[in-house]
Length: 207
Image (tube, rainbow, N blue to C red; front, side):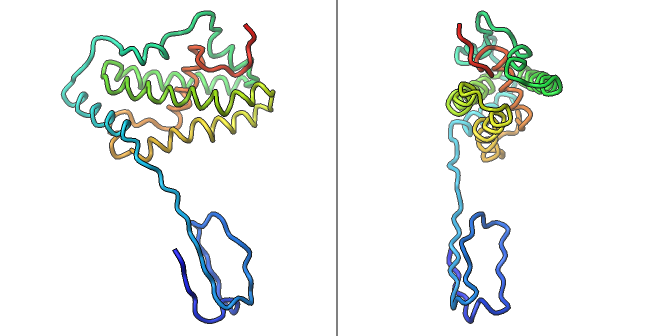
């Protein structure tokens, strides 16, 4: 949007907007001011919306499956020769306190996910989010691990490039999610659950 301010904006005039992320230089002798504001808009995730709506109906009518769908099995099956979450995080340089927190987040997530494990839509949601977490980690974080960047840099990339994009998706569709209500701890728990099943590594292993 654009504002035209009459008079001399350099004389006893101020402009404040806590929502403006980028500002250019301001000339106190300017005769007019043009303020351009750009808003980032996120598109709705129709796949998540559909799954959230289906899950609501399944829970309401107690429509359950007796088996897990194939898409979810690949992530919930522990891969051969995995060394487990605690050892993985130790290899990645995590402190004992950080490992303890990761174990708690994983446990809380598994408890919530298990509660809805026989609803097909819940399985579809988890499978969809698992794929995003795994592929985002491989794309943005694993190269930093391979380059042996400091753990602080790696954790920052995890937060910004793996966790927050998923949270943004969930927040954008929050009105549809009346059952799972995943929060940031749940997504970290999901990350560590996938680590424990050997779908995510915090160190480059040469096998």
